Image 1 (cartoon, helix red, strand yellow):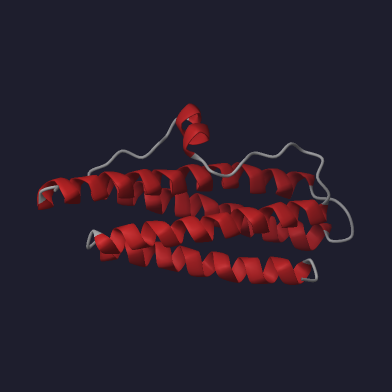
Image 2 (tube, helix red, strand yellow):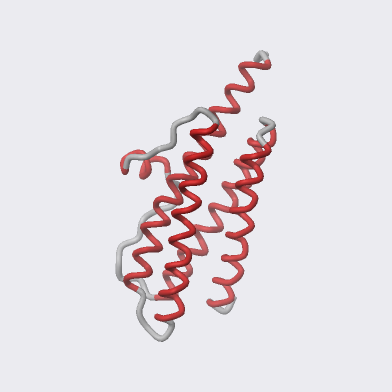
Length: 156
């Protein structure tokens, strides 16, 4: 049976890994949504162009908040392109998607992140790290609102 200290350090390492996945996902989303912002075309150009700008700025902010939280907890956030790509659970897109495909992929990514944040929140709470759990809850709530709005845009 693990000693209490060993159990705590394992959970801390697990939490930092989960947070690094979030850093990597937000970094990839920043690039992906910025790409959507540049390449969106069609009758919803203006609306989506503005919305994508709002969303990639939010992604940048969240990536920074999580990385700083990792540092505050004594860890090291992933920061190289190689580390980001290896740690992310979402995938890059190539240019050429239509507006509806962009929104659909964004909904899928956000739903994945909502689920992963829920798991990270549970680990943080189990470790007694209410600060991290609260930070993730705010981000998760924002994503849930985005998913609702983006699905409404798609007519779902």
